[in-house]
Length: 190
Ligand code: 5GP
Image (tube, rainbow, N blue to C red; front, side, top):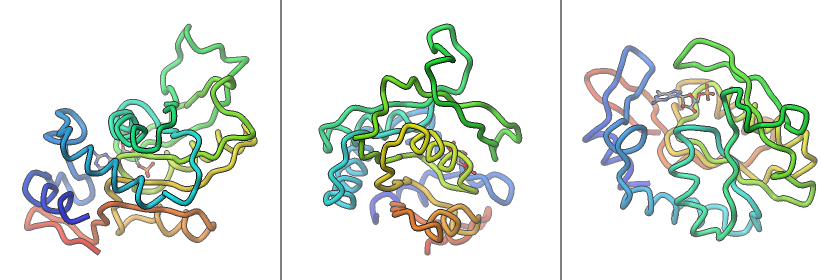
């Protein structure tokens, strides 16, 4: 997506060898006009899939999921990362996710009431690196008996293995921008 790539080049900040900071438009401050364009693009890419629900993971996925959901006209469910008295653990699907940026493993939970075997789920997230978050969400969808229709990603880091892993397992993955390489000298797209 041309507009997104332009914004990444203008405002993205490369940290170390493999972390891209996009706090000024996606992960802290939110550029709503850009999010709207991305929401339309996700709808366009998954228009034939008869999506009934969007699933994401707190916190960074919620904004893009909520905006995209307006174009699909479906509810958003977000997996919770923290143990909370508001999530009844006996009535939740749970999976483990290793966080690439935080270097730790955490549990995600989704209340069983919000995923049904008849659902056709679109998973959306901000980044795809090693696909740990995506696989955790897929595990939750599988436990519920729903169908995983596809995965939509705002920024895929193509030099990490997640995209290959998911596509090779037959999942439809659509990324709005795929970063081929990045350094403090610049960002190149696939
Ligand atoms: P994965 O689970 O695919 O290894 O990593 C994806 C998750 O880690 C995303 O949900 C995102 O929050 C975080 N993440 C991975 N790489 C980056 C990055 O370069 N920048 C930012 N801001 N988040 C990242």
